[in-house]
Image 1: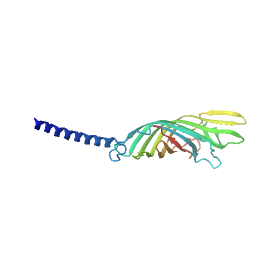
Image 2: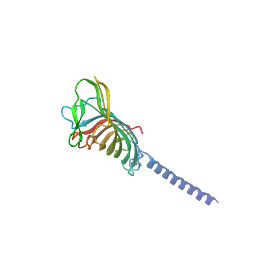
Image 3: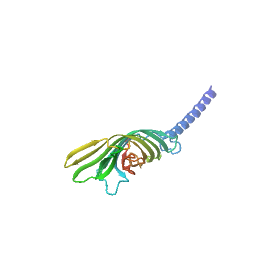
Image 4: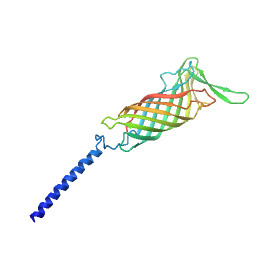
Length: 234
């Protein structure tokens, strides 16, 4: 009987020690400070951007001012790539581009072909507001890098495609407030690249559109871009 109890005691100690080792091992796997075994969690799914939006490639006499303030909102899914520092992000967003400048749109209709082209001219006279605004729905795709540390350093590089579903020109001058919708010859389809770099919930952000603002019947060589701050609460 004593021998049986002694054997039972040894077996109990053995299994207790084994279970404790397994518990410690399991804790190491789920700990975010275990750089070797840590499995990444989904992050960076809700993105707000306050940005300066403008155009590149405009004529020399056309210049933007500080009122070119836009925003971007995106709701994204984040798919970690195994246990690495990388993940893949995809989702949908709303992008608002605001171009405030000394420019105006001029329509020119060919009397023979009856085709209307859009020209970019210089706004004359005094005015308090002269803006062109676009709203787009976009699909962003991103490759993301995040460090495995308490304060995540992150870099995100990707591309996005979108469609301009609303646009208008707003002017406030001596003639009053005038808003003109659906500017002719605007390129509705947009695509470009985007970039973010930062720590935790705050990043610097930038985007550049490879597509032009206007189609072949409008001013050529003009591309939208933006730069600003991204807040990522979740």
